[in-house]
Length: 339
Image (cartoon, rainbow, N blue to C red; front, side, top):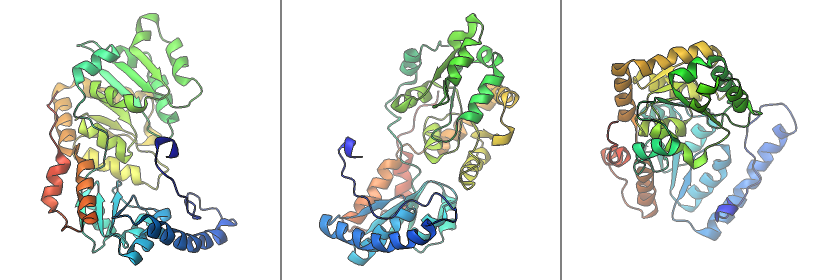
């Protein structure tokens, strides 16, 4: 954060990412109490017009302080099933923004709740043809992008390795391997020379991931909120493999996509080379591919960031909150042309 030019103020509170019985069971309540006056002093000193939070345990002191000082707060939650900390902190927010309508019911709060989708980077300015040319993908080639987001790529990497060389025969594969000890390069070396260029391993893509998605015909990946938001904004069919160790949040996200007809869900323990090749049948079924693309596009909300910003501005300026239908219209944004 400081390197990007944003001031960062840390509270005594730590993120609750473990449940082990240790000294933190005693220290965490103390840290919570100490964080309350810290948050009050920070807000008194800065006097913000509004507070924005993604919820969670570390947000609770700031939200309580904002409530005491009369500062409105907007909470955004991206998963279908909110975690316990988000459910606890939602009661202190002035309004709530979510990615899925079902989340409003799960939070069961009297606060106004708006379906905005997940704020993502700008996808509407990226041209598919230009993106494919940059990646050296021919007009008749099918491009499959495989990536695991920030969650364990090993299962995906093993499946790609097991599916070779048949996988490279069926499609050009852009494989984001993560930090997995040169797994991608080992796969590439084992390929016949005529297929080597059809397999493109890379450890990380960063902002270039949007170019890859714009060029893709199919995505294979996890079910994090941001991943699904960007994939649907591009109207891409997906083979979704939910990460199994995130409190089932990813699986519920994946089910929403699969039930809408935009994805094929494969459980993590069932995802291997044969499962990956079976999923690629989507590329050989034009009608199914078009239907899944349309379903994904219908779920996409490329204007989500603008919708969240409008809610936050309304709170900051003490204006009435916009109508949910207007928020939905902003979130839908200008639609991408079908490809």
